Length: 194
Image (cartoon, rainbow, N blue to C red):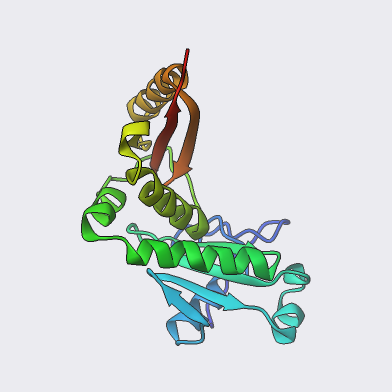
C-alpha cells in the first residue's frame, strides 16, 4: 500500500478518513483483504492469521494470532487483533452465526442509523458477538427484552441509559453490546424475582 499515514506515539493513525483512530497496520491488512489475501470472509468480516513476515513488518503484533477487519456503513475500517487461536476461532464462529441468521434477525441488526459527533468505534468481533447474542435471546423471547439505540446524539445516549436503568430493576442480567458505529443493543435476560 503506497499511502503514508500520520501516526501518534502509540502507533495510531491521526489522519482523518477511513483508518482514523486505527493502529498503523490496519491499512496494510485492509489492502491485503481487498486483494483476496484473507483466510476467511464471514458476513463481511475478513479474518487473517499472522505469520513470521507479519511480525517482522509490525513488531507490535508479535505474540498475537490474527486479525479481523470490517468496513462500517459509513466507510470506516475497524480491526480487532486476537491474542490466541481460540479467541480467533471463537470470533469466526460468532460471525458464522451472524451469517446464518434469517433475514428478519439481520434486519434488526442492520437497521440504518446516521452517524453524529459522539462517534464511538467498535470492533468487528463485538458486532458479531452482539448479533450472535441477539439470535440466542430471540429463542427465549418470554424471558428477555432487547432494544437498540442510536447513540450518535445526546438524546439517544440518555434514552439508552434510562432503558438500561429500567431493565436493571426488572431483569437479573442486563448487557450492553456495540452494534457498528453509534448503535448499542441492550439485552435484558431472566426476569427478576424482586
